[in-house]
Image 1 (cartoon, rainbow over the protein chains, first blue to last red):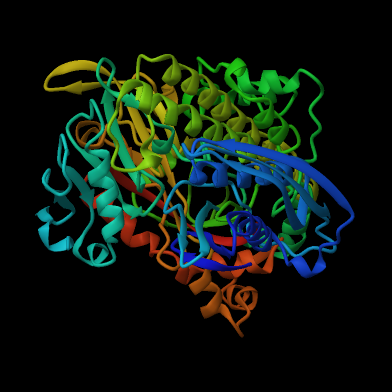
Image 2: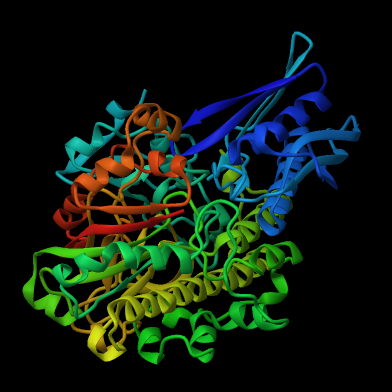
Length: 142
Length: 481
């Protein structure tokens, strides 16, 4: 699993890849945290559990990431490692997930300040499987 | 494709024909001169065209010269929809509900402040939290957030910050009627709880400025502005509170689109009929977020006045730090406008566009009834900002709207690349601009080159008659997130 940043005028995005949709989702979440701060300085002191549900894989991804945005913006929790424990996708496309996110409290004295993410958006959103590899594009409003 | 199929109407206007994308109900009009037209992105044109397909759109899908690609609606977009057959769309407002600009005048000359400017910025930077992961200094008592949502800046005045004279100089009196806190989610409240009185990050700022050019002496006098004077500009919005309201209602609108069978060319245009429950609920929550933003700018202004008093050792009377005005540039409002000679109530969406009401408009305070509404247009931190006045022409052509800023030309990544090996901080200092920034990265991303030249944007709205230039303000000290 891996991620890279996407260059978008005015905002920022992540392209995440993984051998399974679960891995790709985990990479997208980690990639998003890497826009907020340098993950090398983040410790795994605490774990929070988040869950999300959506009408489609795309909707699920946006809702999942917006849960993480919420926990950062409201409570300053920044994740380093994301572990999706449960991921169910129905044939209709509807899906839900539960994840443990390992990280710590954001501290401007120790953590670099990167981008302030307002939300994950539906703009240019892409969830696709090609040659056995899942690839996700998601753009954040900054 | 594209740019060639557009039709130039005159020096300042381009038409996007109603055949540009399928299903357009009206044409698009983009306010651009030839030079700015060269940088026009195809995807932004397409967004102007997509908005023209929405139900009940009236006259045209409009975009200001600071247009660039947004989500669903382009940034710089203005669109009005009929009350009976039109829609309300959170995407036409944006994530940062009531992002806006507040300008304070003073009795001070720049040369009086210069010896203490560094100290002053230090105090402002300390007192007004900014940057990623920062919290406001104010802890709201239980029940207080309800009052912020309902009363906006009036809440701050009731807490002893500022006065009624400030409210008079704020769009909508700093307090929008019809806010419905019951439509605001627990999550939005949790995000908003600790962020009142904080700037945020990105392009938000607090600037100490110097009036360096006056274009209309008489109008400047009425606004309390003079050459060489120190002004303070505050650019921020509703913070995480508003972002969460937008996130929440995009989901609601997704369902509404299916429920009402609205065909959309882009998912981010999700909307609901003006008279639907979904639209009413959104407007109730959006107005609560708008009030949050006005309270936020008001608190920051109050601390700014305190900082000036302590550093300059002067009282409020001698400082004369009255507000010039406060404008919203991300908002949907129900407004009365003339359509084909008839008065109609319309849902006007301004996303990265500023209201610019003309002289005599009943919504303006007595103080500005003769001049027209002050319009505040912030530039990037290295160039300039402008004060303009609203006009009758804007009322007739753009539902009383004008531009809101410079508009980006470089992506953040490209800006960072170009800033590599340079000290943006030093470059600005060499030009007489002191910057205090929470994040080095933000500073590079927000450098002047990343933006269109604000002067060329303002020349278009001035030339097109949408608003008239009054004064140019140069930054001398900047606090950035």
